[in-house]
Image (cartoon, rainbow, N blue to C red; front, side, top):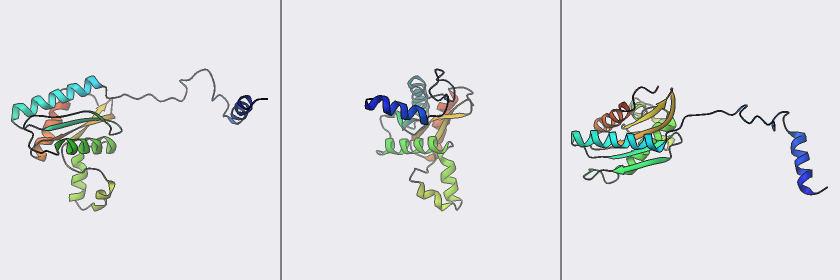
Length: 163
């Protein structure tokens, strides 16, 4: 008996019955994703809102794991590190599945331990939801936290009701 059949025999004899069944869909969860087209739509809406209000900014759209899908910095964005701030805010929002400002509020409200999470607890990012499930987030860095959040919320509004 060669090594390959022996290993296969050991694996299959220890396997849970039915684990190698032909029906691969059993026990496999499916989830919605934030695709590139939707990320582009969010970016465009955020930039249009920012331009209309005179608040040039950096925008980052991330997936549910906090990994960047799109980032852009508008001409005249006032904060040079805006891209890093927008990405950090978006990542925080995606991973905590809530607006990044909620964590800033927790810290300001006395929950100092939140600082140790290693994420960016600053207002300006909102989760993107599909059927109640967080599929990513949009983060913005313009000139003020209130403007950042307003731009992110306006971009999300263009997607319509999704939760």
